[in-house]
Image (cartoon, rainbow, N blue to C red; front, side):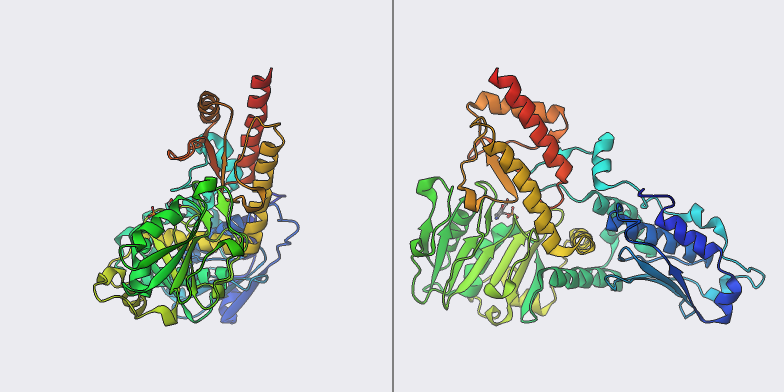
Amino acid sequence: MASGKSLGEKIRNIASSTPQATCEKKSLVSIKVLVNVLEEKKLLPRRVFEEMAAAATALSSVHGAMALASAAGPVATLSTFKSSPPSLVLKSSISGTKLKATCSKTHASIISKEQTRFVPRCTATVPSSTSSKSLDSVVEDGDRVYNFAAGPATLPASVLKQAQADLYNWRGSGMSVMEMSHRGKEFLSIIQKAEADLRTLLKIPDNYEVLFLQGGASSQFSAIPLNLCTAEETADFVVTGSWGDKAYKEAQKYCKANLAFTGKPGKYTALPAQNDIKLTPGAKYVHICANETIHGVEFKEYPDVGDSVLVADVSSNFCSKPIDVSKFGIIYGGVQKNIGPAGVTIVIIRKDLLGHAQLQTPTMFDYKVHADNKSLYNTPPCFTIYVCGLVFEDLLANGGLEAAERRNLEKAKILYDAIDGSDGFYKCPVEKSVRSLMNVPFTMQTMELEAEFIKAAAAERMVQLKGHRSVGGVRASIYNAMPRAGVEKLVALMKSFHAKHSS
Ligand SMILES: Cc1ncc(COP(=O)(O)O)c(C=O)c1O
């Protein structure tokens, strides 16, 4: 807690000292919650939200109501509306985001006429989701490890806590998200909010569809040529690592796939200059992998593809930084690294590219079918989409993608500086200008040393550091949800391990 009373307590105090009479006289009562951002600045915005959600739940419970919390920011105006059905609205004065609590029963039937104050039994109804732990303290508590896995990967602790709180009874609906009809109003509100928040985060233009699909990014390796090319047409591939290579090989089944560049001779440690890319005139699209998860190379600027359509696999750097969507025909990626649990692949596609699928395209691979059905052509992975939505809310509450990029740059610098400053004890093979902010591969002098390091890290509860089986070495994946403290702890171990082995 930053100082003194928690936000929840402040809200409850103000609420409990507000005469009910006022509430009944005016049909709308605004209770100004005077929370100074500076005073509270040590709070994670998610915590503030959780506190507000708790307070909303607490207050609405006074009215026999159930709270339906969504999102808020650090400074809030709390209002109770005497409406039918009654609801509570928390509005952030910074972001304008509203946290709405709807009530299951009517105001009047619950509040007794004699009751003159909000009763302070609010405290008793604060749900278990209102953990006051910050992300780092959750890890340091010992109940969580620092997970450097490449995917499925670590998720924000606050998102997991929220999912835990919602698991049994999603916001008063009486059911888990796992039990909901994908066509019911509850799930529709979840998927629509997830899409809206992703559109806000990535500033997705209106002429793009957002699809929540299944089958992994690997399915898109076939779906993309099937949707964008005929069998006789050409697609260009800029191959800068194993994933781009897989996309290239799969496309050969459905179109003329041309290798416009391959970084294989250089062991995928660099990216091509524009002149190195041999584009085919009239190619239907040019495929790149924006961040090669295994080799740790990341495009900082994207190739100029002229009149062709740029298609990017962003599986391992999705939502790690802002991206100009309008430069691309398709951006796609599995969510299991930066966005949510495995099971969903997000495809962001320019609308004019829809409706040209090859005749034999399986219905489930036809983007137009999914666009026409708002990603509900068949049963979607509802729970995964719901968790993705929580992650989007969390990113928005923490300053959006600009802030995410700042945090990612800082973390990556800490780690690359430690590697480069180790007098060659640790080596990152990737050319400095194209090093990934997300996946940091490094090697040591022998495989035995690497194995010992990985073991020492695991003993300190830092896990999943083994490099991909195809390249070996060590790989630290430091996605959005990896706290800076996790990277600092890894670097501390690297230094002590180096000291131990240099004598
Ligand atoms: C860059 C990239 N593309 C594609 C894939 C394949 O994704 P999926 O397992 O969702 O098919 C991965 C998986 O790690 C990846 O890192």
